[in-house]
Image 1 (cartoon, helix red, strand yellow):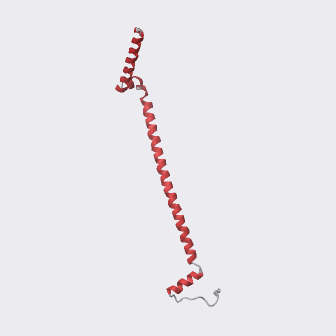
Image 2: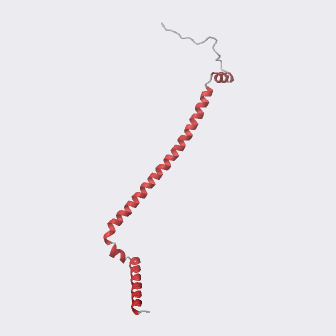
Image 3: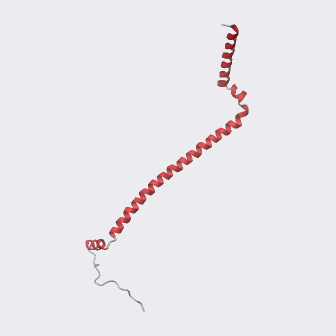
Length: 118
């Protein structure tokens, strides 16, 4: 093997070890990234704002879905109660209920008429 190639490999390994040591030791940040701290902080700030906004939107959507489900249940309840009241307000149902309860009210013998005041 050529001695020059061997020296180049050793220099490359030493440079790699030095680079790895600089990165893990923090020297890389001092050398390369010292001027970039404001930008890095800005990016982290934007990431935090983005996450916060997404969590807020998700919470709003969950609340909206829950409200829609509740509204659907309330509409179904309203519809069933309205149908029941309509059925109970029929003349035949009212008469049957009055008889069941023993009410002294009875069916009118003459049709209704308008009274005029003088």
